[in-house]
Image (tube, rainbow, N blue to C red; front, side):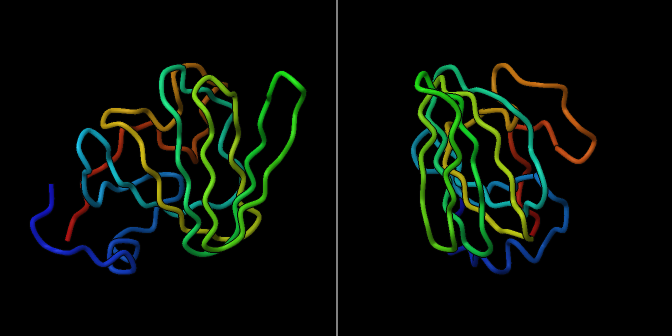
Length: 131
């Protein structure tokens, strides 16, 4: 838990890795994470938790496999979207994009079930923010 304000631009400037979130603070039992993304993530599902996305800069597409079929939502800058628990999804950023995530502490970036993890995706529960 942070005891001082955290500048999101400074937090994002402190690292360059893609798909490798940094924990900027905690709210109750949830981590607030920021990360840079570009290109494809992987199909995955969080069985027991929703996943909240806020696009700070850029544009994020999230493909969803729902009972009615597959669809993609597009999140432009300053848009939010929550992927419901149990829904298989795959984020994709067509341009360099910065996002903020809200997830229960300990939630894996690749979910509970997932495709093979590509080299450019960090399978983590979040990294501490180095200031």
